[in-house]
Length: 170
Image (cartoon, rainbow, N blue to C red; front, side, top):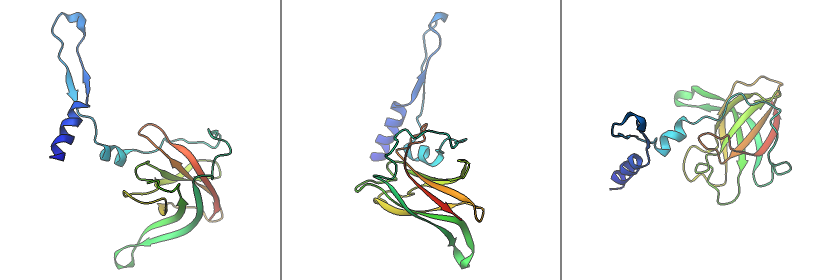
């Protein structure tokens, strides 16, 4: 029954378009289905072309409620000990009671010039809890300086709010 209600609400919330009233013909509206919440989350990506000169909208409030406590090299091994993921593990803490999945929180790795190297969702499953570790697949240059940045409350068209930042060297 829940699936039927969801299907009806998607059609009801779709967008409508109509022909011009000047033609003298009756107007016909065509409904388009709105994307489901899951598909929007799967296909959303944070804005590209980020630069280091973006100002912090909340000066002095970074690393207060949210914290990145560690960034360490990691390698995930799959079946038969084949390496499938090389990069960094970002350990983070969010405010108590917050679910990063529901908030669409994400973490990016930027180089010393402020250009994004890689990013991933802070939590890929519901009910993550207020702390965790995120594996981010990235080919980082040995000896180079990077920053891990935690963003909260991302939307389909916004990058979210910068909450925590952590500098590290590979």
